[in-house]
Image (cartoon, rainbow over all chains, first blue to last red; front, side, top):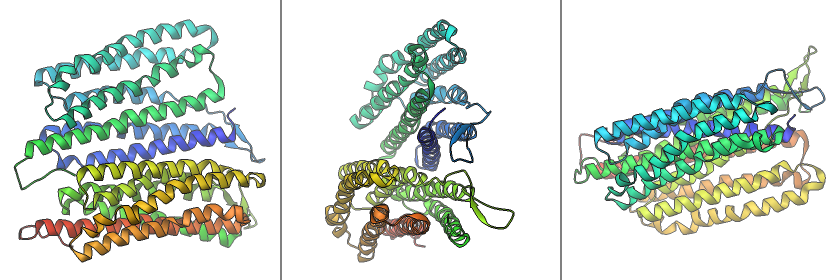
Length: 260
Length: 260
């Protein structure tokens, strides 16, 4: 059983994440009319990622609060309803491919390469989530071997994605002439990789003997922080790239200065 | 236990605050298409502040009504669910940095100074909230010393923010040529500082021996009034600044008079 303080911390963090996802979604979508046609899709998709995450945080928050109740003595006790964390996998199955697509869409790539990179990264990331999920269900002590098999399986597409982001797309990043935009794109690539490293580490917790209620609190905190960085943080950086690129495209046209 | 009257007063004030936050949000967002590109972000962010506050007032209101129930005899009694006020901290962690950013965005500052000021004020205010929170959890009688330590810790970034708002940004305020705009910006700076002074005072209540149910009513009233001034009041003033500055930028263009 989690303690009352642990319960409250997870509760607050899930609610905070929900509010952050909703706020980011609205900001990104309200800025769509101000960017160039070329970048509207990237900005809408960035907002979709946080919107889908907001929906899942709403479900996770409700599942958390329904898994516990206060007894007449003012103590916290578990209800019969188990806390359902599988929502996170459903979330990632949608948001992780979209996140990679939004990055590809703001990069300087020829249309056909943009399409092929978006397709392979989309498929690789969906495969990564789908392979990881059955391992996540294997939680009994004698299935740790099974868990490792799925972990290794999911790491193959994961490493392919990391390699593509940091190496494969490097030429396109270097092709940016504006140093501010180049730094933003590098920032997007690195923060995506850094924040994603949380997930395979947390996955390994049960195999390392880290279990129980303290682990649950750590996992929920870790996932929430990673989600906020990789969805809201990256989303805001994508917005800055789209607005800077739109401004560059419109420069000289006095009628519609787009910076702001 | 709060009395039935105290229960009703807090209930009404929380509901009033929720309605005010929602109404302000809608007004600010509906005015976005009418301001100049340069000020759209500031206006959207002002609406985000009240939107995030509305979400949290909805949660606080629900937590308040679920913490009490009416017995068959028509008496008010406490339920097992404790009233959760930690939402306020989750709210401030998001809204206080955004509030400072919205002020910076409407001031006459070079782009790089605007960015650096928004960053330092954002970090200082998040630090202020994060340092205050552990002290707020220390509510037992023998932890008053702990509470003072966190209060002093949070006052350091607080005083830095006050100093920046009232002194550090003074040159930018004086650079405004339109006296009406200059007065509005001064108003924003002063009302922010005045309304924020409520929070460290309320924090000190338990250390002054002001506890119990009367204190709860006072705290909820005080926080709600301060929130309405610093979020809705400041938001409306930011709107007036953005619309006046947009009008100044568009002057001479008969087609799109922007004042209103």
